[in-house]
Length: 279
Image (cartoon, rainbow, N blue to C red):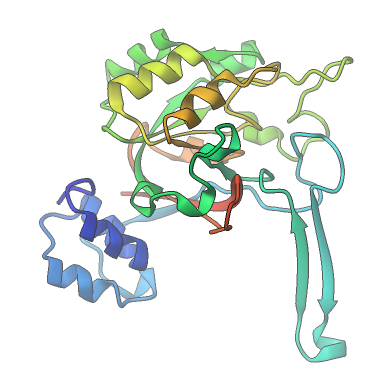
């Protein structure tokens, strides 16, 4: 049963989480069965048609996490009560929309476009293809994904229509290493890899992709001043995911990824929990 052939199925997927996996990897599950599955709250309490592995693609949010601006204050946490003093623990936080692992909504660069709360939930559960450019990124911090690299990938892998394309640069290993993630030079210019405009356009035109993701601060490479990939992708109504991690644990093709941003009214983006299911 295809994830893309049934909008009703996708709604069940979003309610239960487990139905997502069955709809993608299962063999002909009946609608009535999926509705029953939607009432189950625990992944471990149900027998799956095949074994699933859940991989967390989300960086931990903390005051030590790097930000695009490089300034302190993009994330703050305050303890409001403690168990010892109040009998319960609670806190509050302030956070930039585009901090940590987060999703960019089309309105981030396109006036009047969809805000984060208006993203179609059917598009937040996607098959994913992972392009590994770690070797290129290690040699050249300013590496841009090329169309030629994509065509090389296509020789041995099949990219699904409407998929999420995730770029594995290896940059996530630098996340908490002082200054190495932003990798700014003496003039303050950052250096890390990203998508090229040509590569993004190729993926949009050929596969009608739904999203781009990367394990760096931005889809556009570090030195970018015009954010042309942002402008292209978001103008097409797609969304983007930045500061991913653990992409090296995913297969080149075949994983299903759940993108879960906060439903912020009018938001230009949102921190997100991003989870992958692999067989």
